[in-house]
Image (tube, rainbow, N blue to C red; front, side, top):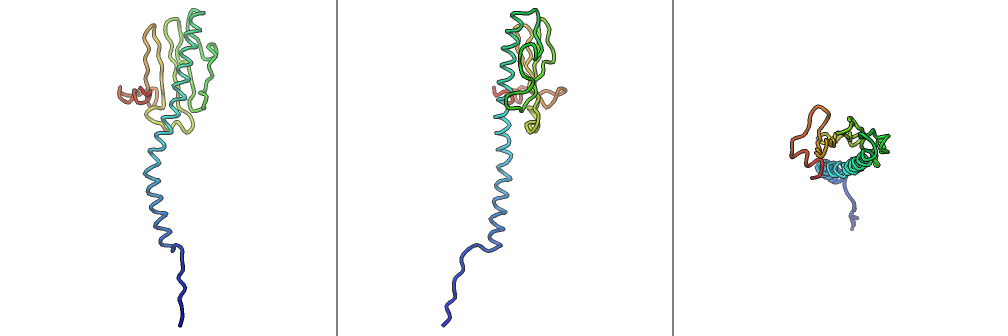
Length: 146
């Protein structure tokens, strides 16, 4: 009488099927993960823009105009290094500070540029993929987390 020994484990076909299912599931989850990661990195820019705004107001209190990043003592990159900051305009009544996504954050197309404009008592927050095109109100609120 021969007793067959039962083998345990996975066959190659079963392993391929499991890998295929895992690949499809990860492919579906990746964009959601990327979106959440980009949104969390945007907070880095929002904090830096708020700090620049406070520094501009302190500078203006002691000077006759708003200043450059160097004058107001703000770093040209955010703490996390995901955005480059720039003062694109600064005079006696108005300043514009913008945060441009760099590195892996540049993939955040709709919110690649965050711009804070202060003109007298009026503060405007805008966003967009680049300098030339700005987001509509709904996309702008999403970029700024409002």
